[in-house]
Image (cartoon, rainbow, N blue to C red; front, side):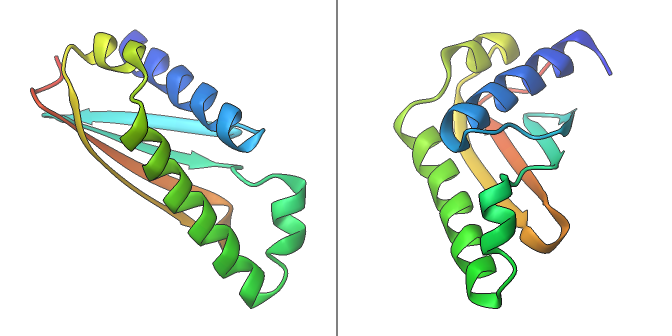
Length: 114
């Protein structure tokens, strides 16, 4: 993994830690044209793991995590992220698989990432 990917991972980890109180344990990013595809594992807090023991709890955690991430990035994109890739963030698609304690986010930027 290159320096740019590592720096991108650090930004994503920091944002998630600020939002949820815990960042992912493992994170990996691939840059493809104008996209950054980030996979994360070990995303859930101990409280979320407890809540996710029920089917209803899984739904609540999934909804909260996916909606919250999108809302946060919609309101304020981290400046260092756009500076790092040299382009403006246009869209973020994010989903989590609660049973597997993992998530994926696809960041789509205005220009290709070089």
